[in-house]
Image (cartoon, rainbow, N blue to C red):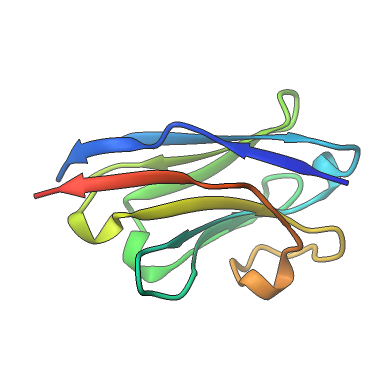
Length: 125
């Protein structure tokens, strides 16, 4: 069993930055890929970024490339999403996720079976 707790959300102006940590507990964390997803009101959940267990491979959705960076510190059981140059369209609830069976780095929700409760990010223009 894996438990995930996101933090770091808040309200920022366009162009600002936020860093979202996701703390994981459970004995499979170090072997599991991690992903960040977001969901805006009235929209489907969207994969933002993902990283393999060792951190050697990452994938980003096109809209966040060159602005967001996913990383992980396996000594702290934590994955991070550094978000720079934020835009109003980045406003959403952000969730981290892990998987007990997937080993890749594609941020596709169907590949993940452990989810956090989410942290809200609001970007004003």
